[in-house]
Image 1 (spheres, rainbow, N blue to C red):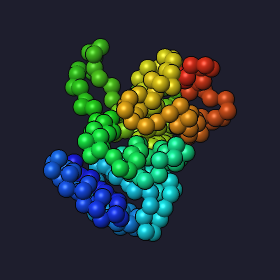
Image 2: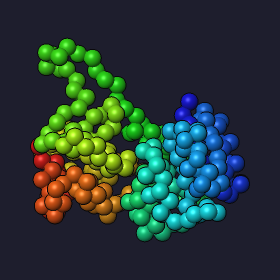
Image 3: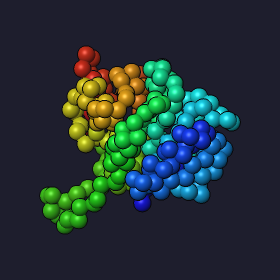
Length: 235
C-alpha cells in the first residue's frame, strides 16, 4: 500500500485529504508542522509527500528545498498561493508538482499516480550476458553512469544528488543520446500534459544539472543547448 505523508495544518483540508486518500487505498499520515513532517519522514517512511507552504513553524518555497534535502520521494505542493512565480520557485526548489487550493481530489489522485509511476523503478530484464538483447541496468558514458533500477547518477565514481525532475530529464537524455528535445517534450516527459511546469522551470532544471555534472557549466560537454529548439545530450 502506498504511504502518503500529508503536511497540512488546516484541520478541514487535512481531514478531507486523509479521508479521500484512505478511501482510495492509500495509507495516510497527517501532521501539522514542518518539524513533525521531518520526523515522520523517518518513522512513517512515506512514498510521496503532500506539502502545504504555510505552516505554523515554517513558510515559503524554502520548505521544498528543506524537504528535498531530506528525501528523494515525490513532493506535491498544495498551496493557496496561485502566483506563477511561487509555482516556479517551488518546482525549482525540489517540488515535483503544484496544486492550487481549492483543487479537485480526483485531479490530485491523477497527479499523484503520475509522479509515482515515473518514480517507480523498471523491472530488470533477465537475459544471457552474450545475448544482444540483454538489458543493461547502468551504462557508463564519459565517466557518467545512470543506474535505472536504483535511480542514481554517478560521475567519476561520485554519486550526484538530484531532484526527481532533474533525474527524469537526465534519464531521458541518457536513453536518447544526440537527440534534440524541445522544451515542450521535456515538460511532457517530466510532468505530464496536465501538470504545471513551463519553459523557465525546464531551463532551471537543466542549469542545475549542468552545475552538478559539468566541470565548466558555461561550456557544457554533456548537455548542449540547441538554440531555438531545446537541448540534447552528447554521447
